[in-house]
Image (cartoon, rainbow, N blue to C red):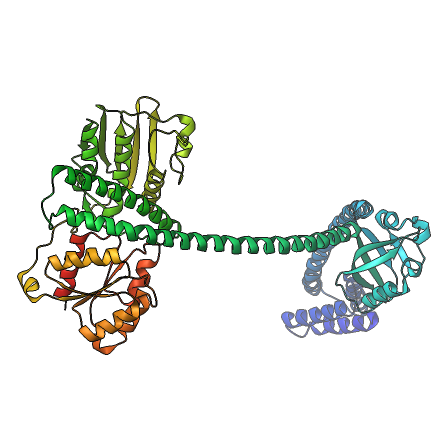
Length: 636
């Protein structure tokens, strides 16, 4: 190759004497490139130039110009190779540096790898789980300390031995299947320890394929204690479930008994309410008739006796109402009829109820109402009930010629009104404070107590106050008096119509002259006589039915203008009689007013559901009854 290139180069040198220099140089350069492409070095290429020149110089005479051209030609030919030589030297130097850097990196990474391997071995040997490595023949090639400790073998007793003696047939088949299928899911496995006992473990397998060799890694976690704890939990749960079942059965029986007790209590209260209200209604009705002196003039002593009878009757009625109100609240069947009230009116109206009692004891009654307080949204009847209960207590527990008072203060920022009833009475000891607002509990519960009462008043005050969204507090000192403060939300609004006074209805002339017919359905003879006499005095005609079936028949026969329906009657009660009247076309539109001693939670709702137009509970306020009859007749 070298000799062939030399000949070509000689031909080129000879030819450039007869051709332009640039063409000769181009051809010489092509020969040089061809030389390098065929693996010749720059040194070889210079040898070719030297051989070519020697050949040419020996064969002919070369003039000076020719030599200069030849030297120029050689310089131009060698120039690219010089650049290549410099690039090569630079590349060689760079490569040498890279090799040195690579050697350093290899050394550092080798050290890191050795350190990592050391740490990895330390981690594997100190880990809390056992680690074993098996080949395809199920022989152990590596085990850590924990693996040996768990099974009770030394490392030499396990390495290069199969796992056949460590597992029974079922467990051996299970692990073989898992590893052969490359299933990496964890599973439970029992190993046989050196002492013959079995240990329950959780095995997490994985496989690594190196060339054609497969290695199986198994991480073994001892779950014996966990299994025992789980079994204990299962047993405890079973025991607990049994206890819960037994307790549930006990509670069911207790609830059934409690429900039965509540039902019996409600039935008892309903019966007692009826039995007490029925004779009480007859007493108060007759008292009211006598007080109007429609049968003749009464002397002062008779008037006094009648007033005492009415006072005792009203007191008894108040006790009955307190018991029923508590029952309604506990049953969740008491609804507040809230409206906008003038605070001053409600306070003065409440004070009117205790004015006579305070006069008898020569008590000074002080009232102080914040001028900024005008109206409040509350239930008229229940707010009066709260204040009257507190004022009654103030009068009851204050000695003669002392003072009691009612203060009202409004706090606009807190949106609350404080109603405070105070007295200079006997006071309450700190030890007795907890008893104050409990039902049927009195501070002085001895048989020889000085003050009468059932212990329901303050319990009702607290319950009714809470139903209004308020609270009640007390400050007291023995011998110096007490201050009961009821705090209610202050929501002002437009005042609604209230009726705080009992008005005596006037008898319209057209009603008096037309003598409307009233059907009185009542089985109590005393009430029949009292109501009949009173209604006839005011110009009404009265016919009587003593049970529900008779009431239906008389209604069909007489077509009365209005029906006064008692609820508890023999043969057929008033509710069923009302339903049948409403289903009978001829008499279905007759107004029906329920007059009943039933006043338990839900009684009023059941009456309206049966079809009555109005509801009055006994004892009946006769003037109120006349007003209600008049209203119903006007709507006909």
